[in-house]
Image 1 (cartoon, one colour):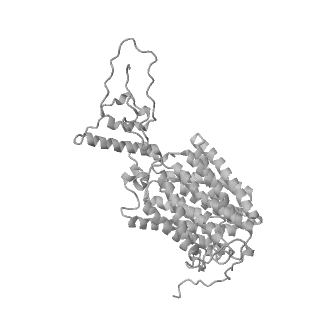
Image 2 (image 1 turned 180 degrees about the vertical axis):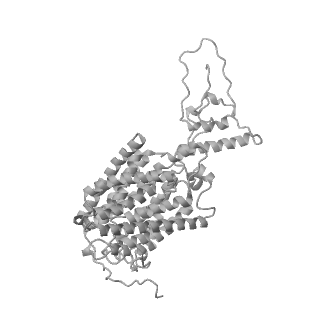
Image 3 (image 1 turned 90 degrees about the vertical axis):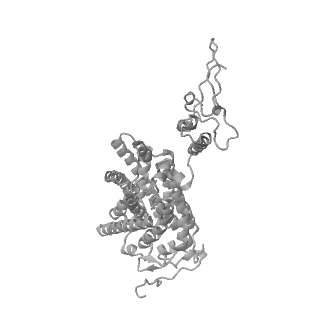
Length: 530
């Protein structure tokens, strides 16, 4: 019992006092909370556009479910572990804020979640930090896209939140956390969010393994973003939400928040421009995906520094982020690490280099932290410690989940070939995919009914394969009839429909679910004189 952590309060807990609540700061923090939540759907679009069309719903679901599961865990125990009464500076007392029962809109933020009394509700602080906890596990999903079972994912992020994210938040952001008391700074989550998620993503690459392909075409399809419009939309949503992510981390509507928002936009813009130039020189053409990935690299790298530096330093960080993260992507490919969406290279290494650069670029006139060799050394030591902790704990945890999950953490090769959207969730992201599957099922049923003991498939039954091409209307009949009489074709029977006549047409007798009747272009057509 003598080795158990002591939960002895070192400061008095705040008491309810509505007069102490500042309306302006409260309004800004509420807005920032909404901004940060908005980032998770943005991440879903960003990741969803980068994966293949067979797994887009899977990765969106992994992001969306984090909004539910993590919020529940945060309410029950997560917030207490991160911001409760400290046990030796390592972890919070789980009973500190169980179910947030002792927080209300009139009780200002204060000990133990923050040092000294604040002017906005502690309940709002708990909600704001919940949004950070939600997006952090979702970031990891991009590394193992297309190849992790949903049940395994749920187990992993639940335990990972409690063993990695909450301790990191306690060490750095809790006023009694040992790294925070030592002098380590992380303005908005370079270490707590990006390093933790990025190096967990790297661990998942080694545990889950690389994607496998039967053909070169299959590999190209898996590595080609299926919807670049989603990528651009997700980037815009993330950039917008990052103003609350970094600006809200000032925990006040003041000058530090202004610096944080401006620095965020400067670094993001600079990283995007530099990334486009690098890609242009390296690959010969600039791409929208490259511009978007560059912007995210700048956002991840500026996160630990946003409220401690001036805009000229943010400009420099954006330039460094583009070259550094791009090089990490090339390294990842050279090493054969199948980090599907470059989570480690962009988020992990972006947060890594940004946390270190803070030691060299901090300005005392902005956030009260002076740069110097001593501070730089602390930032480097803390960043290296947290990268090692996140990688090792995540690796062990993934191995444990692999053992617990029936059949292992990875879906079968057949499930992956079909696509996890269908094999895991029974859904298709796009109607035409569902139609193709529906037509094939009907064709198989029709063949079994007409030829129960014959393995020869009629021409009409194989017709759905041509639906891979866009529908085309049959060629128009000539305006003038031939002078010579042409014999009328007989109507073909089912199973004898001339495939060569309409290579782009659907199967006659089969139509989209929900149609009242067949459209005209799906009716059997015949060539020749009427």
